[in-house]
Length: 84
Image 1: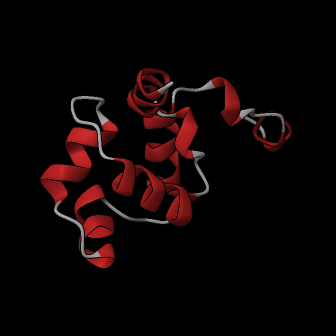
Image 2: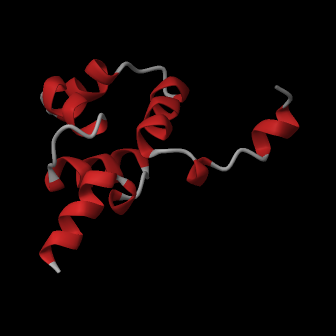
């Protein structure tokens, strides 16, 4: 892939869990390292990023850390819809 193609990459078209993996790779981190740096349990992070657990605080932490909007995570959207 050329630099030109990378400049055209629209991360908004990817699911947030893939964007998170790209973010980790870009920063040279594993999910375990990222969790440890943030004082977060790696197992909780894994469950949230895989969509198997809902955690508003963790999704909001991910937004602060990575810039991935909290409302882009499917389980967060479902929870907000249920609250309406």
